[in-house]
Length: 283
Image (cartoon, rainbow, N blue to C red; front, side, top):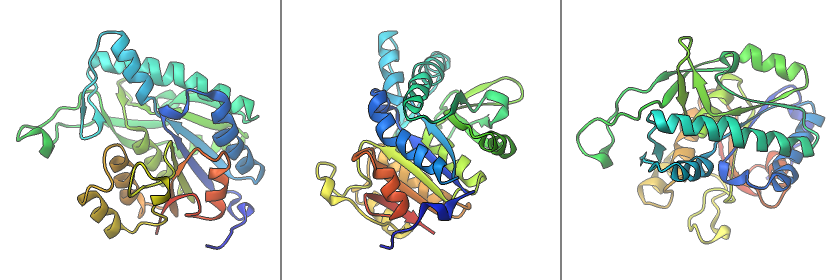
């Protein structure tokens, strides 16, 4: 695997998606994702960061006496759950990410896709889910991305500001939708024609054995990934990440990396040498 120079990506976009499970420790996030983003900015790479808040939303739901419901790995979002997602995503987690990036001296504006129409969406229609039986499933206030305001992303980047987006989107009628953060990240990356999309989690890539980090798969083609899903090797929360990656490979993204947060320099190493510490999907 050839080592690339980050300066070769100057003027291009990197999109970094961080899972909510990684945000509990701002100092750790600053030392890994924050420092990587700072390095990318120093090489004149444009960066946007997108985050979820799954664990925080679940914990808050339970404190409020609500029982979270998921279908095929996605959160069903009724009105009460939407309120929880607003509090967790745009409140607690958004502030914690901004604090972590400040430690790393990354100038960021933490907001949501609702702000200024950065990410517009429409409500997802009821859909068929084989595991749920023959009836269509209404996911509630879950949205599908309909438009990305790329001009506004470019204006913030031109001002030297990294947008940090919580995965809420809206429409012109003032409706707000909850969207899976991996989905927002892939759609934003495709719209910006990002050269790299990093899906950062607490595992070092796609693993054949979840209990064995050394079983990491370095590269995956479409057919290999589908076979791994069918065989149950790729399962649970990793399935949406892989499916979104496969769907977006033909949408202008050069490479998609699933990478862990440890060691702290993982993102920079993976950017320079794809597949060295994560799993890479390439066109």
